Amino acid sequence: MGNYDPKPEHRFTFGLWTVGNAGRDPFGSEVRPIISPVQIVHLLAEVGAYGVNFHDNDLVPITATPAERNRIVADFKKALADTGLVVPMATTNLFSDPVFKDGAFTSNDPKVRAYALHKTMHAIDLGVELGAKVYVFWGGREGTETDASKSALEAGKRFREALNFLCDYALDQKYDLKFALEAKPNEPRGNIYLPTTGAMLGFIATLAHPEMVGVNPEVAHEHMAGLNFMHAVAQAWDAGKLFHIDLNDQLFGRYDQDFRFGAEMIKQAFFLVKFLEDVKYSGSLHFDAHAYRTDGPAGVKAFARGCMRTYLILKEKAEKFNADPEIQALLAQINADDGAYRWSTGGYSTDKANRLKTESFDRVALAQRDLMYEQLDQLTIELLLGVR
Image 1 (cartoon, one colour):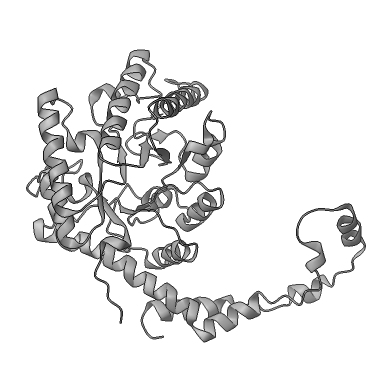
Image 2 (cartoon, rainbow, N blue to C red):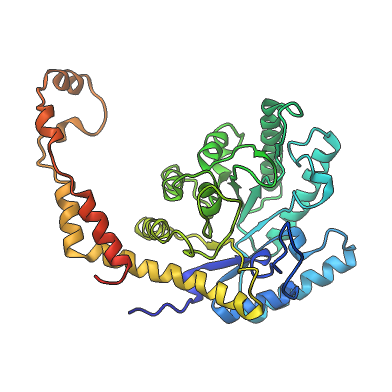
């Protein structure tokens, strides 16, 4: 058995809104004491986290005066210095305040769109001041309940214009900053624009500075749409756009549950961890999740430790998978290549095309090959259950 105690070198991070969540939901008020950002920093240091992330108003209330803002930020900086925690990522809350009831960058009201840019620029300044290198955009209200109300085409143009503006702002300020777009299919809007990671990747290619913009995929958000999260992560990685990642857990087809990482769909969590470790992903591992509403402050610490421990346990399982002789023998057999068609790889040529067209294939024999995926999957399950 390995050591599953989290350490800063594991790069685990949490948002102020995660461990700071007091258990309020649409049907009930808070069940836990509200704790301050400074208290959250010390809690995260106690459980072995590397960093803390925040929305602008998680740290500085939207109603704060300049003097209050400066005092809050100074206290937060001191907590970071005292604990050694860092701020790898920041974001803007463009969804809670009533002004954003019809969206921020995609609102039908041009004054709201202008205010959203104003708010975001100030929030970017704050994030950079605290050391953030990644800035996430989640468009929680960028959508609609009725398509009679808003043009999806115009909304896309507005979102593009806003991101182009903010990229230019970051460049003008000479900030060392990348942007990461976070997709979600629905909730709180009936339909949210750009609902999946794949949609975000397609949208990024239309921006003025696509090199600055990547994605921040979240387990729960892809699972809400019934999709395979690891596949979305692999696509983002292949595109060079995996700038950040949100880890949690979620049953398919439910509201946004934000469970502790690995709490529900352990097999999916395993293949995600295996992918991230196999490709040597070196960014932050951010847990965007909440403790059960049934738990008090001690449960919040157990939740935070549990997220990190589960990742480390699954990391060890991935190492065992890669070293298991029977599993690896099956994979070698499944992927066996006698080299007979190596000439056809490496891209197109006229000669390859002409030669392939004249080849003769025994499709019946090819179809009869036994791939042994049942056995491979069972060995994976046995490994996860601890009997290998």
